[in-house]
Image (tube, rainbow, N blue to C red; front, side):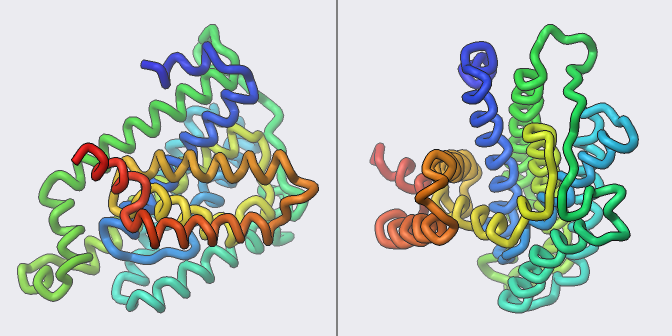
Length: 301
C-alpha cells in the first residue's frame, strides 16, 4: 500500500529515485535467478539491459509505439536473444561462460555506436526521447504513471519467479546448481533448463532496461558499459544470492551508491566507486555471507 501511494507523496526527484530502485530490483531479480538459483555466472548481463533500453527507445522514438507497449516488446526481444545465447553457451564450464558473457557485455555498447545502426541508436551521442505521454487519459503525471508501471512490472515478475521456483521447474533448476551429476542421472536436461533460465533472466534485464530508458528519457553507449554488469553482481551479493527478497535490498544499495557518487561527483570518481563496491563485497563475505536477506532471516532466531 505504501509503495503504491509513493507517487502521490514524493517529490519529482524522489519519485525518479524510487523508480530507479524498482528498475534495479527487476534486473537483480533476473540475475539472481541465473546466478543464485541456477549457478550460471554472467559478467555481462548489462548487455541485455542495454538491449531492452535501446529496443524500447527505438520503438518509441522511430516507430511511435506507445511507452507501455514498448516494454513487453523489448522483453520478448531480450527473451529471444537470451535463449539463443543460452543455447549456445549451455554446455560451457563456469569460467568460459563468465568470459563469454563478459565479451558480450563489452561488445554490445560498441555495436550500438556503429555507423550502420546510428540512425536507430543515435551513435556515440545517444538518443533522447522527447515525448512523455500518459496513456488512456489517466489523471497522472508521466513520472507517476511510469513509477506505477514499474511497480506493477516488479510485482508481476516477482510472482512469476516465486511460482517457478516453488514448483517442479524450480527444483530442477536448483538441482542443476547443487547436484549436476545427480540431476542428469534423474533425467533432467540441464542444457535445456540452463538455456531457459538464461532467456528468462535476459528478459528480466530487458524489462529493467526498457523501463530505465523511459525513465531517464535517454540512451547512450556510455551508460551500458561493463561496469553496469559488475554493479548488478555486487547488488545480488549484497542483497543476498539465492534470495528473491535480496533483489530489493541490493537495489536499494545500488541506488545509495548512485546517490553518493552523484552528490559528490567532483570528488568521487570511478575508482572511488569501485573501491566502495570492493569494500562492500569484503564486508559481505566476512560478516554477511548470505547478504542482507540472509542476515534478516537469522535475526528473529
